[in-house]
Image (cartoon, rainbow, N blue to C red; front, side, top):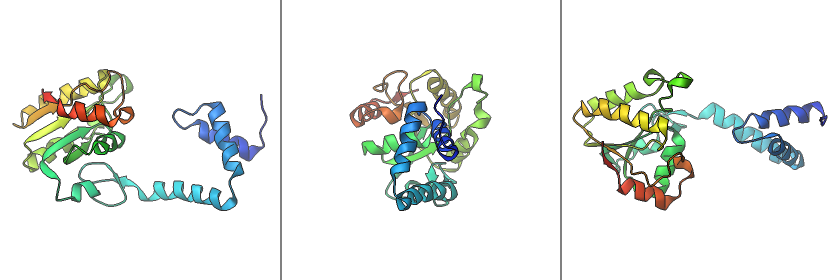
Length: 199
């Protein structure tokens, strides 16, 4: 086993905790950081600290923001009667990149996954229902990933949202089954959005 100096071993260990980073990638990143100038290293460290201190959740849609209400929720040019429900902020970013969706968003903070102990109470479903009761929405587009958990979440939401008299649609499965929205290209997401269907 390779023995690193203690500070380097700590850095490699921290990089290994990141998703998708194995031991070799962690080592590569650590050696890259070692080659940075002190100013560049400090800028990286400052950026990490700043994002942890300043980024929180929008009180309306639960997207990441550095303000109380995010830019999307404050944009009066957006269609306030159209709401897209996504699992997490990365999915919101993927939808925004298409340039096709002009409504507002609601971020659930995950999907239903009973085996992992994630039920409706762990997601922002209660807040979604309250938001729909307080606002005049004509359509809710459910844009969860086309996998078991995403489909189960979509069905759960559709059942509860229909009771509110709102039109509920689901993005078409132009996104491959088992795929993630944040990996889909823009053309695929545009096609999926255009082909959404009633639930």
